[in-house]
Length: 157
Image 1 (tube, one colour):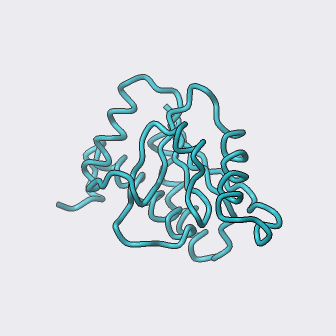
Image 2 (image 1 turned 45 degrees about the vertical axis):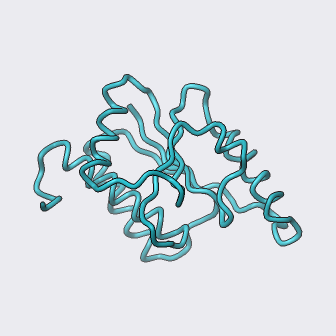
């Protein structure tokens, strides 16, 4: 199984990029992983919130394959502890899925088309994080999940 993180907008804070790169490097030892940061929608200041979400949705949908299992990182999603998230990942691995794509939307969330296409929604916290921080937090949590599944000492309980 391959895991992909799909995001709207670039990550321009160097400290966040360094953290993402570090956890992506670590993840390569456990599972095929890739991240794709799509450009922000042009002229978004001239669009309504709904129009922006729809345009972002079109861009995101163009990156997806029919067989992809889609998980939205969404504030209205299901809350998981790190151990429960590792069990979620393990369940996807044993079901024979080829690709699980986690998506971070734009500043206003997701379009209806993306919600309709999604297989699951996960919340990383009840707190609100910047979209750039979500990328780092998710990557670290995925790495943590893999170490939990391997019984390695990264996660303390």
